Image 1 (cartoon, rainbow, N blue to C red):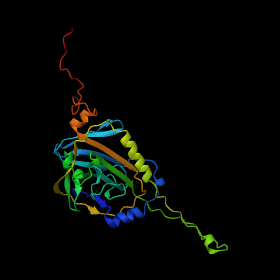
Image 2 (cartoon, rainbow, N blue to C red; image 1 turned 90 degrees about the vertical axis):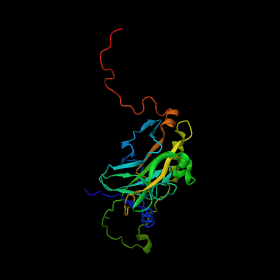
Image 3 (cartoon, rainbow, N blue to C red; image 1 turned 60 degrees about the vertical axis):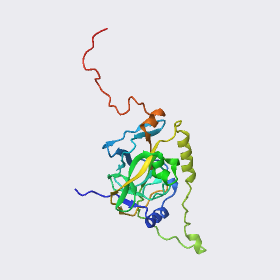
Image 4 (cartoon, one colour; image 1 turned 30 degrees about the vertical axis):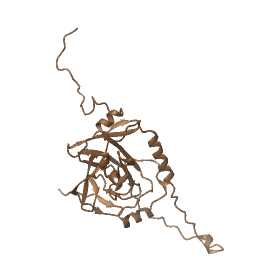
Length: 275
């Protein structure tokens, strides 16, 4: 069975086209659900279950284990997914921003992103490691270690323009022509405000223990494509926070005695004697 490769957008020429043709931020005010995002421990072959805590989702990573970011397109249209790991764009290596390069998923497509993109042909695998060994820390950017983010965008649909007869020329020629409306490029204030709200709701703390390393090279081909975003603002933003099991337990996010255990509907095997 032939495997469909994820398409890659945001190479300098394609990115310039995408940014130049975005619509105003006001065109996308409501957040949608375009993607389902999960983290898979590659070495254990298991999906890491998120733990909800104070409005955030957390996962416990095992140091030394490789992992993949799995994305499922839940729509019947192409979707652009910009992936950030520890505040770093997983394709370009830049400090992450939603307007940067991303992966294009075909309708209903499911992909596993297993590492930092090194070329069209290969990646350096993601793995959980001590914070000083993380790629972000080793490149002088440790402040955002501990979060995996995805910004998802709808593709702009080309719509046929209805025909309207030319307006009659009245007086000066310029008066009969419609004025061009300019796109509102505001929005940086909205994103910074959202970041401040996120930090205000963060649990009390303890230093982050683990981050994402720059692992071994792995063959993982992609192809380049063009993608025109429907809006400059993401239609969906997803954040999964992570740390070691010990760190999350110490912060009260998970309970050590229950984590990883499956509940049993009938925990006792036989009828006990009455007291």
